[in-house]
Length: 226
Ligand code: ADP
Ligand code: ADP
Image 1 (tube, rainbow, N blue to C red):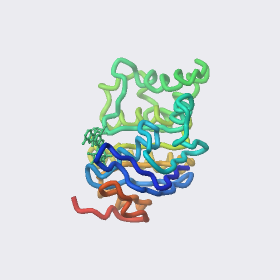
Image 2: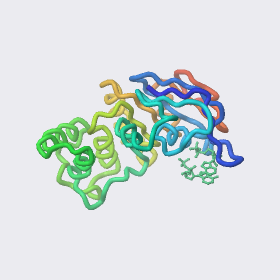
Image 3: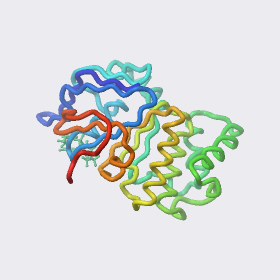
Image 4: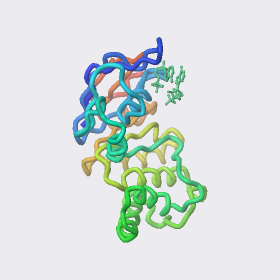
């Protein structure tokens, strides 16, 4: 689903990623870990073609990202859902409207939106919050809205950038259960995290980056003391 082959991205003299090769299969759940400045954001931005690689090849699904035309970039990004540490919801829209907006952008009909949004809100456990505004919700509920928005158009890949970073441990556990359920429906998940306890508990594939190099790629523990 996501293949990097000998990918290098420099920022002037700074190494973002150097000669990195990795293959993430369709349906995988991968934790991307490493210290600050390691290259995790660079890796994510290359997948989304927010950055261009200097060398190497990147394939995401059917897309040859390295040779993608500007016209095709929106098509690539539609195949990828994203959630962030800080939720990034629209404060003046209700929960329903926040999620519906992602379907409107895809030119889905009002009928499709009225049918699908409540289904997905129920799926993520906030079926009763459709009329609320983001600031009326707990942090965990807001992250559920963000996840609903990210999966509403059935992306092949879900990128989660420190999705539990603003959540207390119990709430984080609930969000991880939800991500696990989404993964079990076939969505490939790449999650950037510093949460050692979560990585250790989930026992998934761990890709570790340090100074722009993939230093580890196996299953199990977080493997850092921070
Ligand atoms: P992480 O997300 O793991 O914290 P980044 O991918 O943001 O790491 O950064 C990797 C390296 O690239 C770091 O040394 C960082 O300082 C450098 N870097 C990232 N973005 C830029 C930029 N726009 N200009 C210069 N250096 C950058
Ligand atoms: P993260 O919290 O994901 O690690 P950072 O705080 O490292 O993100 O980076 C935030 C933004 O600043 C990113 O867009 C990154 O590209 C940019 N950036 C990171 N390091 C540098 C740098 N040394 N010089 C310029 N921009 C940088």
